[in-house]
Amino acid sequence: MVEPDPRRSIPRTDHLLALPEVIAAGERLNQATIKAIISEVQNAARAGEIPVAEVASAIVSSLASRSASSLTPVLNATGILVHTNLGRAPLSPAATQAITEAAGYVDVEMDLGTGKRSKRGTGAKAALLRACPAAEDALVVNNGAAALLLAVTALRGRGSSGTAASANIDPVRKSASPTAEPGEIIISRGELIEIGAGFRLTDLMTTTGARLREVGTTNRTHLADYAEAINDDTSCLLKVHTSNFRVEGFTSSVEVAELCTLADEHELPLLVDLGSGLFTPDPALPDEPDIDTALRAGADLVIVSGDKLLGGPQAGLILGRTEAVQTLAKHPLARALRTDKLTLAALEATITHTANPIHDALHIDPDRLRERTETLAEAVGATIVEHDGRVGGGGAPGVPLPGWAVELPEACAAPLRRGDPAIVARVHQGRCLVDLRCVPDSEDNRIATAIKRVRADNA
Image (cartoon, rainbow, N blue to C red):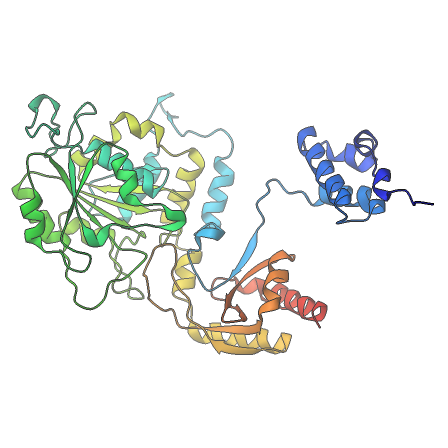
């Protein structure tokens, strides 16, 4: 006699919805979410991934553990400070508090004194200008790519006809009105960058209709290359920091100050995309360019990301001369790219407060890091190895951050990621390396417990 398929006994959806625990979950989760969780568990039972008898308990467990979002908090044990796959920069306590306070109604566009409408983001802008006195004005948009897109669009310069239409030209050098035809952007071939997921800055810029005028070669570009390329169609000069790679050997590039002199001679705007977001030079990263230096050298506009070395939320920060910044701020595209109140609150708090996880990880006390690593290794019965951390996220390419890591078998990496807490370590040359550089001291015991559990399960 053929045994009946146990999957025929999977509880019906209406029966599961009637469970007291499921009804109680409806006080915090909507019905669509609850039904989706029920369907996921039912499908897992149909696939034989869980026993039919455990369907109800699995649903109750899933509902109980369901957080406000599907994003899972992780402990970054890779040694990479700005890890794009893990959300780049972790926010400071002050920034986190600022987001909470801004979650309700706030005076994001109201002057409480007069009761009238005010400009958005004045607090974040003031904080930026205090942190970077060389900037005359500042503008915040939703990410670095948006900042570059807005700048290229707004600073169109001359039209493709080869002559400047005076009616379309804005007072800031040769930046144009929104109706001006896009022109040519002069950029070094050594600065044509592709970042993560195949995203190319060149593709972003050409979507505006602008044409890229490539000069020099991959390894060597000279001032004369820029000068020879300038013509009646040139809209701006663009310098991009090669933030995620290095070219070494027989190389040459043009400094911002030299480009500024050339741009001034031809009344062209100079746009500098630095990417990683240092306000001022940092001794830990001596070759990483910073906003203050670029502006003092004469750049009209400097673009950086807020969620990299600055340690703030995702944002595109544009700093520079008042006329140039206002040209961007008044462009219609600026409205589509503007940031929300939560980003503005987190950005202002990041800039005005000293505590910052990215800064702390970059400048961590090496003796303290080694002590923590040795303590962890001893607790889990493992060894420590020298391990270089990295800035990551398109900052300080190739610059090692000397440190140490606990060495575990590669097989430990996956269960550590899937555990509670979720721990993301580095997998390298057949090893699982747990680097505590980016992990708060308070989490060391939880990591030790998780590693012991994983090693016991794999014994």
